[in-house]
Image 1: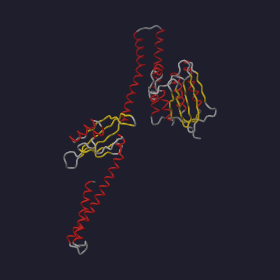
Image 2: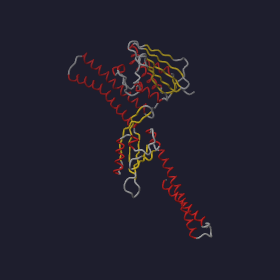
Image 3: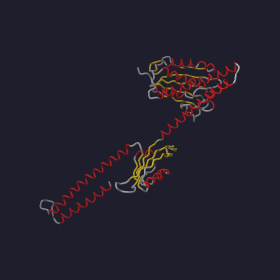
Image 4: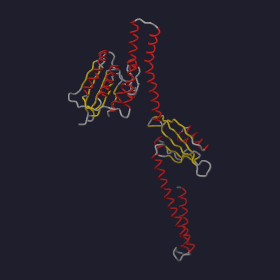
Length: 409
């Protein structure tokens, strides 16, 4: 673009000189003009025409380059061989939210990252591509957020010319990928831990039974313990399979219209033994005229059972009370399950629907369960196009609120 402007200025200067020469010698560029003047004039016209074509070509290429850089999901940076930035695309500016325009400043000054600076230096010195993953803290609002970038830098060279005229640096944000990897690792670690405990107990009791003869009462006690942990393993595997199905793109729901009251009653029947064991008082409040809900009745019943089971296990230990109420809003059917337990600490609430997440103390593994119940509730409701949330103040119980779309008549 700069070369085109220089040529354009020189062309205008030559044309002006020719016009001035014609005026001074009173020569017109016509048929009676000297041949040399006419020939020079026509040459200049051809040069001017060619220059206009070149300028248009440069403008089109510049527009195409800007369109390409602007549509990229990666951040792009071009710097001189002294590592002074001369171009960045819009994506890079959004990635790092620069407080000052980076053009004209050094890479080290803009990014404050020595790894990136050294990587750019190696590219200039060796003329070989460099690839690395660089963690950076990006300022968002009033805090710094850790992010990960896969950075690739390559040398820029003109054809048939040795040495580097600059570098091209491409930033690819891989923060979400690293986050998913961390979730996967945590999931594998949690599953391994959950499986190891009952398996170790089963193995220990089996070895004891095999190595020594026990009386009938001891054998029965051992077998009951083994049966309990075998059931726990079975529940864990069932919940893992259920969660896997719900998280798949096609959860295979059996859609039908049903009464929410029936789901609640069936969930309470399944929880009857635990309700009696802890001496809980369960109250339901459902309007007489309540619209039908459309969805998978088995999945919704399981979700309600998980919420009731959660309230029974982690509610008030001395006088547990559970309130189940349903209401209708303009767009949704709302179900609330409230307990009178110790509540959930504010720091734990954002994680309460994560797999295997348990709040310490009152929500320990001693209460039983697989640690997947609330996660199953969340994915069941999401699969039905609804939402679930938690309302809790420490010391004042917890309320789980499920919203399901109303059936269209």
